[in-house]
Length: 425
Image (cartoon, rainbow, N blue to C red):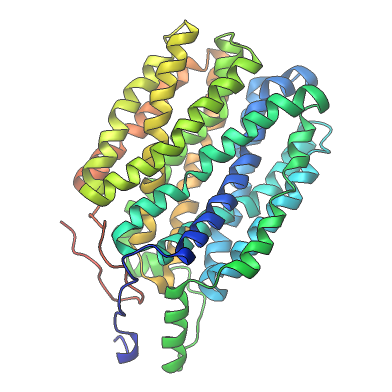
């Protein structure tokens, strides 16, 4: 039975303040440089294949294995955030991936690249769910979907920064320089250290548990035991998004540069423009979800983008690839932010990190297969032949949000196990 001290608390103020905007800015930058590192291998894939004389499937295996190793961070760091707080774990993950990204620039072959990218992804993968927790628990309830969408603006921003840096530094100093520039995010840790406080909801739970003389303990099965349906929904959401995006982002540079013969510079330019517009897609989708709910807005973004994914494989002109790719990327990325952020709203603060980390882990185990599967298809046939598979994964989000997932937009988050924020509809 839930102790009296653990009753639902007053909601977070439904307005933006200078502090909540600062927290959002810090997490956006942390997310951006997280994505910067993950984008490097995507952009330099054509260069690595030529320099090291390897097959496309080799890069696919490296990307998939490193994502699997990163599952350690996806699970461990959110769990630690439930035990020790969101703020210190956010600092550790950002500092970790900044240092390890710099070391990756010294890789001398595929095996060394696999090793460095794998250990980097442990902390890199842990940063993402912890940022979701921090924003979900700090943002105004009325604008939570918008905040989670804007947080993911860090993705296209980081991708765009990496693409632009590639255009400048790769011709001068080679692909390794992109990794060495990745050390700079360590400076964000200073901002986290002095600029933001702990999540207000985490502190509230901690104070309430202390007053009831309850001890925090690690119970990784609690989310599955207490919220089985929510865990299934969260895992499927993560899987469908990650499978589609991992395959799309890993192979789109190679698809444009080599398979469609656009070349490295044209590809980097296209991707930079696409990601610039994606910044607005995240904010737009989040804002629409706050107005109308995720149940209909997410499918409205997902369905047409799934069709465009299949169309891209049959295009041959540079202009056609640019415009269809721009619209497809806008819709895919737009739904990505508020779609993934949705999972933070399904669970109470007390176990939110553990639940999100577990669902993210289960979803990533399957979703991380996409780069390897497409790598095999690309080696035997073409990347274009694998795009319908990504479209199939993505379109399955439509019935999930329409008929299975409960609507949580603008509903107050709960803090303790046993509280129900909503009823399934």
